Length: 125
Image (cartoon, rainbow, N blue to C red; front, side, top):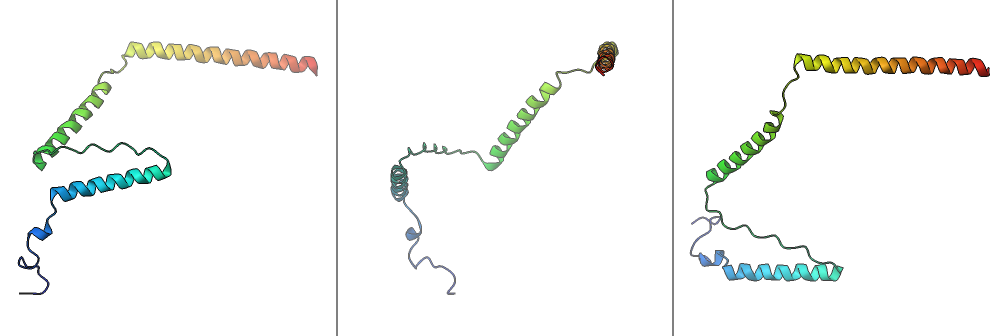
């Protein structure tokens, strides 16, 4: 036998496994240590995360479900974008005419303000 390879006869197979009881005891000890640490700090410990239940699906099934969920999310996102339509020619012309009227009103207001300002300067100088 080679020195670098483990042997079943050395230590036994059972010595390489941990029982469920040992895992539960370690988890309980760890929780007590966290609670004690938070108690020393004078804080309330955060809620413990809920353990995920066993999912017996294969990796391929889980990936397919994730892909379907992402596809559904993408379709929902793009559905909102599909609700809007392009403007028709007469709607564009109407909006352009309103914009032109507003621009004209703004130009007239600026011209009137300029005249009033020049009258004020001439009057007071």
